[in-house]
Image 1 (cartoon, rainbow, N blue to C red):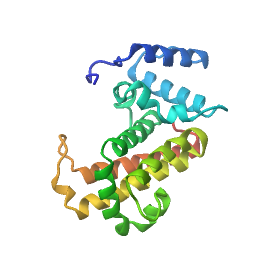
Image 2: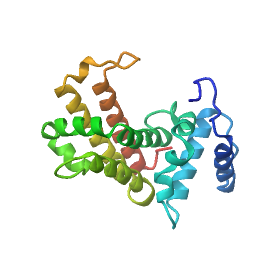
Image 3: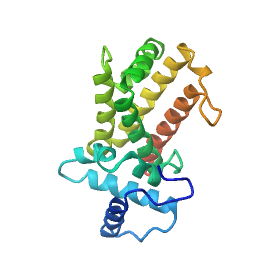
Image 4: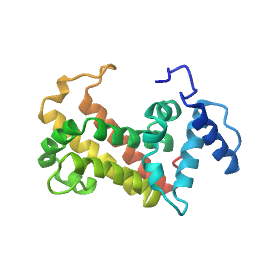
Length: 205
């Protein structure tokens, strides 16, 4: 994975393609990492909302590698378009790579956060396939539906998972930065909800 001091992704061909997309959209060539993050996120959402096959954007990380998206968006403000997209692609990858654990956390948190369960829309009985479908559906909503609703669904998903972690004693599991995992999930949820509000206000960039 690209180091924190290196703004270049591992896959320069994709990076060149994204830069070409920005230029084609009439944008100035970005110079800073923040500008690159904002520009690529805006162009991807714009391109994904054009008539055609939006599913290729849902599976973007599968094709280019999560490390490429990390290099572009990982350090973006969580309450921003690139920060929100990074959270959604990370959620999808987590559901695919560790579906059993995500499902265990979800099922534990379900009875503790019933309102959030309804918003997330996983279904009556969650299994691995169900949580993976929701992660795909959230990204589909970004490109083919109401982006704010997609962000709110992801926020609710994270809140249910956080409730599950706490019920299972997840607060004892600490991330490298010292924050417990349930709190990290709650922070992700709060950032996604704030991003949804900004999208509706036309100020999410």
